[in-house]
Length: 214
Ligand SMILES: Cc1cc2nc3c(=O)[nH]c(=O)nc-3n(C[C@H](O)[C@H](O)[C@H](O)COP(=O)(O)O)c2cc1C
Image 1 (cartoon, rainbow, N blue to C red):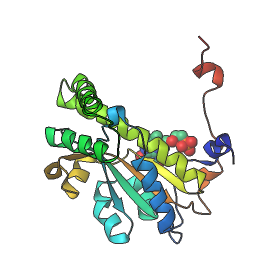
Image 2: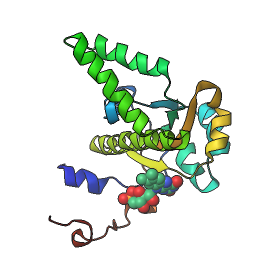
Image 3: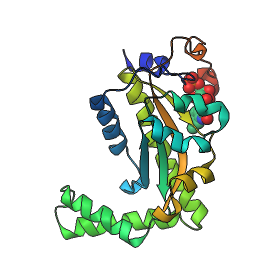
Image 4: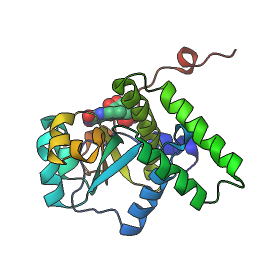
């Protein structure tokens, strides 16, 4: 499939075939795609919780709005995307150490510039805790896009789920104590044979309405 075919094949799965599971190897690949997702100033302000068995799915289910519950219950894997609250000094240091370990800096000056640049952008987007969280959330949605496209490219179906109670999810997973906040849920698996949404035509605004040549 070319990239347009993949984008057309992908659709929001409403009903999964519970008997079909993503292989461990392919799921690991999807986690790597998430890990490789770009983020502003390489901030990676995220953490992902994985529910890949009935017990884990039942645990998070009270936080999922009723109409979305089948997308979680019958999925192969469900992920909860979280942001860090706040991005503190320890976190900034941890990023810098990792980048050094990964060979990003030829000398101390490059390292200092990276650190300064990151602090500049984080400060720019952190005039209030809410603004910082909104900026972090935007980074998460990049990972979402990467994940949905990558999954489709290897024949895995998905559902992005904003229809959940984030405060309930935070309580269930003890996120506040961990310095995290849930933003988004994503289910992955294989479509049920009778998922009506699979055969519904895609609906998108025409090109002329969304692209303008400057
Ligand atoms: C951020 C985000 C949140 C969404 N939340 C839900 C949801 O809670 N439940 C659901 O069934 N679909 C959800 N959707 C699916 C959208 O309704 C869907 O992507 C859109 O209608 C386009 O259809 P398509 O994905 O089948 O092409 C969500 C999609 C996105 C990108």
